[in-house]
Length: 603
Ligand code: DGT
Ligand code: CA
Ligand code: CA
Ligand code: ZN
Image 1 (spheres, rainbow, N blue to C red):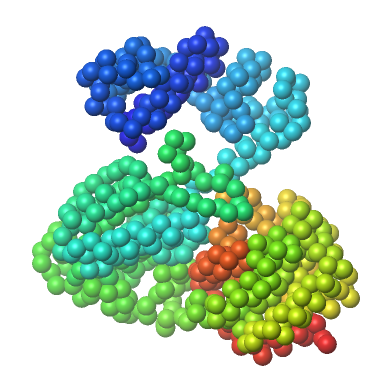
Image 2: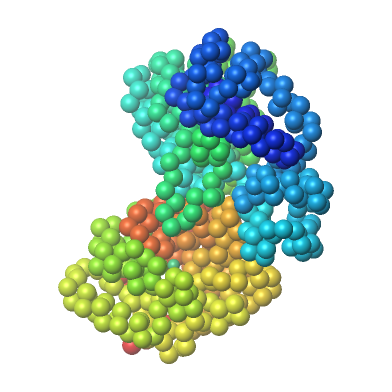
């Protein structure tokens, strides 16, 4: 964090603590105003701390606050901040950070009910006694309860769909740096995990200092956390457009906005493969590889695979020639293994493989089977949706707007469906080389009934059945609900089966083994919803479903043109679940796919 942000943060906290203690409002405001002035200042105030008059000259900073800034520059502390911190319980500042709770309310909770932490606040919400306090109506309390639930859910990990574009841009930036011969992202991102802790970037170069400087100096770097020749760490600004999803899900510094840590490792080209393997992980996979190496009289580290000897000094420092080091495949080969795709390097049985498995790839996908138009909550007109699918080289697009119970999403009733059919028929006349299926994303009601009668479901070309409401129901009820939908003779695909949103809400927790068995028996494909907030089925479910013999659908649940680009996240999730292309219905050719869907919608 910059000096200015550090100072602003402390002044802001002083203001908050003064207010919690019921101090003079002028003093409270003076500190809040000074915090804003410092934050908003375009010059680095550290440079002014030798000139008290220059600080005081800044609008919003008085002599007393100037002294606090100078004290902070000299000692890294503000005495007043320390003193106030001793009087205000730390837990209360956490309560204050909950959206919807201002200092006045928090002070009241503290004074009237002796609430000093989130646990205490939850207690009076649960027993309802919070409602007796002034300004605490039902609506306000519900909002607070939601904010607490959300804060507890948030793991601080970043969605893959937010991290991936950032990592790609950084890799591109590093590739253009003189001397750099290789650049890649590694870590959990390369393994395609749904959320990532930090971004790991690896480069090979003849000029380590140049690479490090290009990295720490790139646009978007908010702070340099560590900087050496071979290893740097920065905090990087995120510009996120969540579109129809709100912004609130992203952790970030209040002043700087959402950010992510990015680590850079700089290696020699000769050890590129060993380093890439090491920094891709997972840690558990790496541990297994090293054990295997030792059993074979070899030793593996981030510099290479070396013959084992009993020396203490690492082999690369003694000039020992590695058995393999430049490419990952050579190292796997040296360990008697086939190349193992990054997405399955999780120590979940991958070291028993005797050949590289053919996992699904983006290029295998030929059809989108879950998409919305302006008729419900999509932003693409029917023609635009079809054009989008065509531009991706697909042979089939299914138009599946919401059904009537999803009223807020503009769900269609039968009458509107019939009108939509006319529009689709007309478009079919004008469209070549693209099969347009008229389907519906039909709500699975909370008891498992479908939102349309069987006659309507049969009449549709394809049915995606999805749970949208009542996602908090208990596991047994959820299981029965999904099984009933799967058993319906006209359902082709179970859409986002649990309804979870990553870092937001857990969704249904049905007995997945029963869901897999029923889906297999009734020939229903389980969807991997490719939107990076959903990825539902999740990776472990995909693995279970594949092992149970199920079919999988990977759909973008298109609401806007860019949603087609989310396909990669669905495919990565499929790969993490060891999904081979033939088990994914979206890879089938037009005839096979049409026949499979049509069996439940005879004409
Ligand atoms: P994340 O960032 O929490 O989503 O997960 P990763 O897997 O990206 O973990 P990270 O960033 O801590 O480290 C990147 C890779 O570096 C990790 O996947 C494996 C490797 N690595 C890091 N620390 C260790 C370690 O102590 N032992 C071993 N064997 N590998 C490590
Ligand atoms: Ca990482
Ligand atoms: Ca890392
Ligand atoms: Zn949908």
